[in-house]
Image 1 (spheres, rainbow, N blue to C red):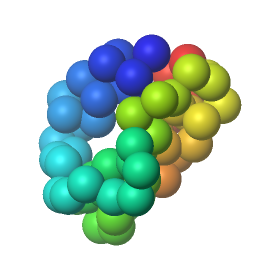
Image 2 (image 1 turned 135 degrees about the vertical axis):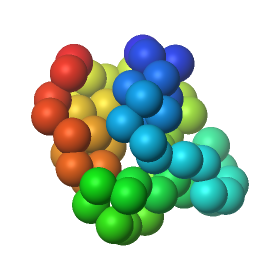
Image 3 (image 1 turned 120 degrees about the horizontal axis):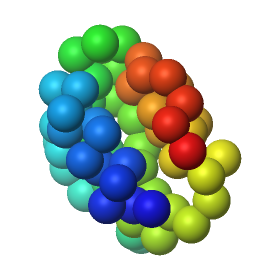
Amino acid sequence: MNLKLKKKLREAGCWFHRQGRGDHEIWYSPISERYFTVDNGCKSRHTANEALKQAGLKKAF
């Protein structure tokens, strides 16, 4: 699910900013104009949808 999430984020114009703590990454969204975290070990559709929401995108999972 994580690869699908990152693909959707990139297609929306979001980009990887830096590595966070543990297996988290910090991304930036030009849509919401904010930074948000993406969990590399994301197995839950709820977590994936929350990342999309923070990026200013609609639910996809």
